[in-house]
Every structure is written in structure tokens, then in C-alpha cells.
Image (cartoon, rainbow, N blue to C red; front, side):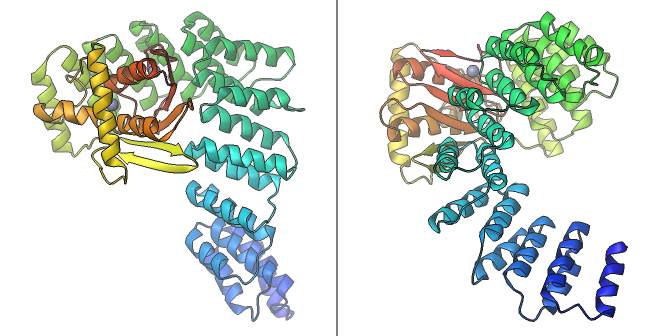
Amino acid sequence: MTGLCVHGAVIKHGFELDPHVQTGLVFMYAELGCLSSCHNVFDGAVEPDLVTQTAMLNACAKCGDIDFARKMFDEMPERDHVTWNAMIAGYAQCGRSREALDVFHLMQMEGVKLNEVSMVLVLSACTHLQVLDHGRWVHAYVERYKVRMTVTLGTALVDMYAKCGNVDRAMQVFWGMKERNVYTWSSAIGGLAMNGFGEESLDLFNDMKREGVQPNGITFISVLKGCSVVGLVEEGRKHFDSMRNVYGIGPQLEHYGLMVDMYGRAGRLKEALNFINSMPMRPHVGAWSALLHACRMYKNKELGEIAQRKIVELEDKNDGAYVLLSNIYADYKNWESVSSLRQTMKAKGVKKLPGCSVIEVDGEVHEFIVGDKSHPRYDEIEMKLEEISKCLRLSGYVANTNPVLFDIEEEEKEDALSKHSEKVAIAFGLISLKGVVPIRVVMNLRICWDCHNVAKMISKIFNREIIVRDRNRFHHFKDGECSCKDYW
Ligand code: ZN
Ligand code: ZN
């Protein structure tokens, strides 16, 4: 209400046509989330100057009308660095990372300088899209233009490199930083863990404590992931208990989910279930999913059924839960249950999310969706896939068609299996990335058993490092092994 009083006073005293006042009003209404009032003020301006226009653009971006913001942006006769920053921030904050990067590149071409706050946003867009090449460019830009290296910017760099699977570079940036806060440490610890370096992540946690940095809830997410990767259940439990006992941090759902995952990974399914039952709040999908995954790994039908039922109670269209349970049934060769589960899925309209994999080649992002052959080099890719499967067969590989694609007819299975988006992306990586550059693929689902096996074998037969980021973690394939130690 104060805002309206201010506006009232402005009109009363005849200042409403003053550009400074108009800019101030636009800012004020944007803060209040009243976009229509911003429009009213802006439309009343006779010749809005750059500052007022930028304020309006900022208001649209802030209040969620990013497309109008872009329209204004494109029509502005001149723009300063504040305008560019506002546009990039707008895209980054509403999750339209690709467009945020596009604007960043436009800006580079026009030679405008960005400040460190915007660089953090650009980096978060790179992290979100998992585009390491772009992330590297941003890093190079930071260095070339001597953008002020704040703790936040350094942390964003560590986070970007770690989440894009380049953990060496992440640690290089980390150790090169003059100042590190709890978020920097947490990013590095979590980055090591998610890339399969569990011991290293726990060592780093010890370093952090030795330097006297107080851990927070986010740190413990990273630490528990580290314990989980190495299979240190008791140590994980100790850290979990220390959260409350030593640091006074109340564990959140995510911490509980990670503990369930840890017990599950170690095959201690009963304890995982007991842990869920001891949660002080209602267990979430994450906790039950961790248990269901463990049931799939350790072939436990009874617990698997319980977990799946609980998940569906919370999210009735959770396709992953149906697929996992049907995979468990398929392992038991219980085809009747598989098909009745299929019927239920159909009846409830549960759709399996189509697989989608992304690979970056020379800074260009290529996207492959399962079943889509529209890529200009698809013929070459198919030839490569043929060659791969020949090589694999010579090495004694047999496709496991059983559990993977229960919703596809039998005769199509092997063909469909060989065309999984992650395989297509890897094949494209082999033909388009020359030399020894690792092949980096990002996918939207969890990698399936068959693709995991194939990637392991390709890494050995073709002597090529492959890094796959799936929905949950990184898989670094090298010499026929995977960093996840075959549990994911
Ligand atoms: Zn697959
Ligand atoms: Zn793996």
C-alpha cells in the first residue's frame, strides 16, 4: 500500500512525467510484482530514456513476461551493460538457459562487458545445460576481461566444471581461489562425490573442518553422497547423526533419501526400510525410489512392490516406478505381472518419458531423442552403430533384451535397444570428435543396463573415455569399467 501512496503523492505534486520518477515507479511496481502497473507508468512516459526502458525490461523479466522483455530488448535503439545484464538475468532466472547463453554470445560480439553477477548467471545456465565447451568459454572470458573474481563467481566455476564432469578442472579452480566459503567447499565435495571420487570427497570434508569452516545442510548432502559412492554406511550414519548432535542442523528430506540410498547400495534393504519408517516426516518419493532401485539391484520383489506402491500413492503417474518394478518382475521372468503392470500403466495414462541425449561438438549442441532420425548425419551414425555392434558381438557381447523395453514388441526390441538415444549420441561422438577427446553425453533418464554395458565395452574396444551424465549421476567409462562401480 505504501507504494500506491507514493504514486498518489507523485501525481498530486505533478512529478509523474519526470523520467527519474517514472523509472523509480517502474522499479517499485516490479518489486511488488505488479506488472500491469509498470505498464501503466511506462505507457505514460512520452519519450522513455535508456534507463527507464531498461527498468521496464527488468520489470518484465522479473515478473515473468520474459518474451515481452526480449521484444523491448530487440527494439531498443541503444543498450548499455545494465540492459544486457537484465536480459541475461531474466532468461537465467526463469530457466531459459539456452537463450541466456545466446544473449551472452550476442553481447560478446558487440564487445559489451558483463559484471561478475551476470557471469555467475551465465555459468549457472551452462551448468544447467551441461555444456562444458560453453562453460570453458565463459571461464576464458572471465580471465580475459579480468572480471572480478568473487567467492560466488569462483564457486560457480567450481560447480560448473564439476557438474559438467570435468572434476580435475573444478579442483584446479578450487585450489586456485584466494577465498573459499562453505558453498565453495560444498560444491567441490559434492562434485568429487558425483563424479565417483568418494574417498577424495571425504578427505576434502576433513580439510574443510580443519580450516575451521562450519558445514551446513548442503555440505552434508555432498558428504553423504561421498559416503554412498564408497559404500561407507557406518561412516555415513555417523555424519548423518552428527548433523543434529554436533552442528545443530535438522536433516531434510534429501538427507534421509541419501541415507536410504546408502543402505540400499550396500544391499541392506531391511535397514533401508527401517530407516524410512523411522523418518520424523512423511517419507517422500525420493526415499522410496532409492529403496526401489536397491530392490531392482538386489532382486527383492516383495520390498520392491511395497516401495512402488508407496511411490504411486504419492505420484500416481511416476513412470520410473512402474518401469523399475516391471524390470524386477522381468528378472524373475514373471511375465504375467509385467503385462498386468503394463495394463495398469495404460489404464492410468502413465507414459514413459522418451529418452533424450545431448552431446556438444565444437560448441554446438546436438540433441537426440529416441526414435528421431532427423539429424543431418543420421546415416553415418547408423553405419557407426552397425560397426559398433559388430565389434561388440566379436567380443562376445549379447544384448539383454529382457527387462529393458517392456513396452515394445519383442521383434523390435533389439533394434530399439540399439537406437537408445544415449547410444546414438555416443556413436555420433565417435564419428565427430576426433583424437582422444572424451565423449560427453547428458541424458534425461537413468542410463539403462544395456547402454551401460555397451558404453563400458566401447571405452575398452575403441579406447575412448566416455562420460555420461544421467538423471542421477555421472558415469565415467574407461578401460571397460565405470566409476559408478555398476550401481546407479
Ligand atoms: Zn539404453
Ligand atoms: Zn556407471
